[in-house]
Length: 272
Image (cartoon, rainbow, N blue to C red; front, top):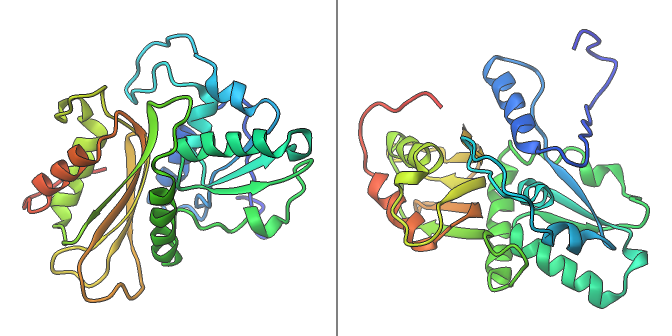
């Protein structure tokens, strides 16, 4: 930033084994501190020829950490966190193999945009200025994403523990109720009642109507960090809260019940 004005965009490339989640959270912290840098989006490139193998390999059990990421395949994690997924080397596979890979990707992350490429040839405008974490355009994009997720929700894939779930509640939520819901979901997931495997959020997107406030909020979360910002767009007269969850152990009814349990909460909420 000391060379301000000499560049327009920062493209940060990680190693093939990196987890993008903690890196994304750095830019959220920077935003809270007043930095001019903001997170635009996460792009994941997957090899068409070897993608299914990489997504289906059973990893060794890792030590559980505060984010609940134990035993999660790195490739699956990168797909789950992506806003844009570039399916590369499509010239090296047939249509059946490509369709199987895309079904697997959609089963893990039904909210990301998919792009097919050869030798990663792609127009820059497709990967730059996504505004995946900011902007009122997210309202209309989220509605489209929810439609896409519903269209793909019955897909079966290799790592069935990682799924995409949508929740649509036709009511508003108090601001402290929203914070309580996110904190319970992200920070106290072990206490969330569920008959299945432990609940763990990898990525969350949402647009919520707030009680007694005109502007809805855009909600984003990666692992145990979340952020909200007002949306300056017309959302109609009917209050509504819409979410896309990507993670493990997700059950639609459990998520809905937790949200409704917290929705009317009044009082102070913890710093996020």
